[in-house]
Image 1: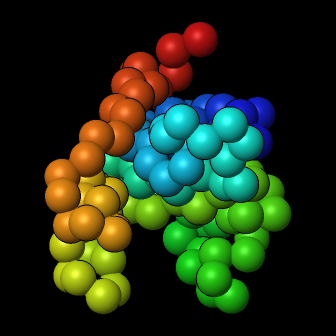
Image 2 (image 1 turned 180 degrees about the vertical axis):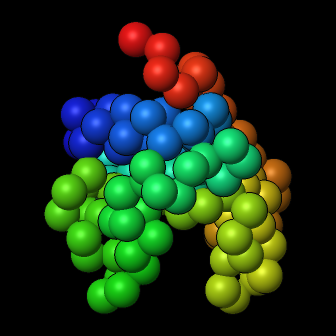
Length: 113
């Protein structure tokens, strides 16, 4: 699963993405998380260089899950039920409604090796 997340980060970085946020059981104390949820900052991203899988939300994001073993959303896109941007939605505990932390990971500049 970590390899899938790393691959997604690298592909986003190559398209110009500089920041990704990691959420779900992957950032909890859960010993064996089942998947990861992430959202990526759309700022500076060149859609022409971005793999279309990052915009494929069909069949419950099946293509993303198969390729990366997780789900990735544009950070500024509103989540369906709440209307909050995904970056904000991920920072609220679904069960309690209390604020919670997520990981922000800088991907560096596009073209950097």
